[in-house]
Length: 351
Image (cartoon, rainbow, N blue to C red; front, top):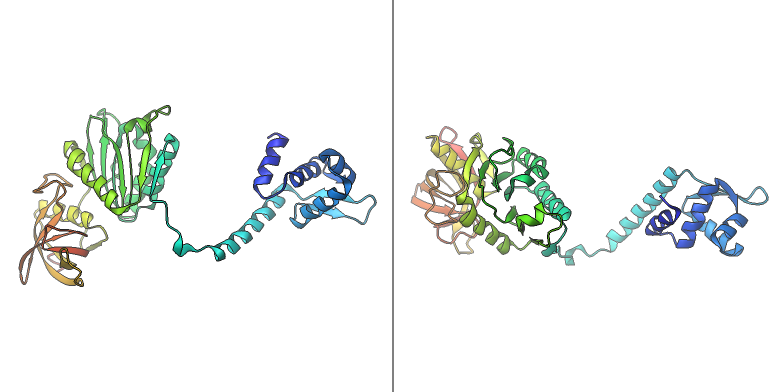
């Protein structure tokens, strides 16, 4: 790295340009004097004294004034940089004390123009997922996020994956998603995570580094919900189902209602009886949630084939309870009798 680049880097650590020049001078000479620093940095000798004192205060150099002329020695760079970082951490703690985190709002909308940044944002959102991931992307881009998808599955995150522009040959790992569909046609890149964050872009924005296309990031729940609704209504049905995970052992509690619907569908498909315990309240009401139990007698869904939904985004249970048969949807359900906040599925043997 050229000396000018080193100086620029040091100024980003908080050194002034003259301090950075003086520090580089001491480093380059190993052991030197105030006169040399003054001459090589083109500053007055009196100013040089002030600067080397500041460098010594930052634990970047040592001053030996027991000899004449006074000698300046650089602390080994590995130690000097560690000292700088330690000072920055100290400043960070002080800034955190001043930071009003309650009034801070995370950016809820942004345009991402760089292909590299789009991939990075996709990976970061997948890595941060806690309950569910819904993803559509081209087959040739799958390897860029495959490791993150596997890690999410290992955390118990529910994942739906639509591989578009599929050539019939691109390998798709067994553990990348709970359900995988492929489609030979192109489709928008779509990611929704935990019903809270989403990205949508054209496929060209991922595949062509010179593309003028861009991605849009959203963190508005209603917009992310609309992204999923568009995905499940317009693109998911077009895919060919190529992989489905085995049903999860029961009992199990679910943070994602969608995941619970998926697992219940798998168990019912295998001819098993499934009971459920849920915290529910009447839809479109502000009543408190109450715990109910019953047996799931039907599932309405378009997550895993064979689909059983009556309209594109329907995800619900038909549950036989002590008070009769009721329909239950997830958060903000509006057509079902109840919306559920918490769901635990059990086999009849566990009920």
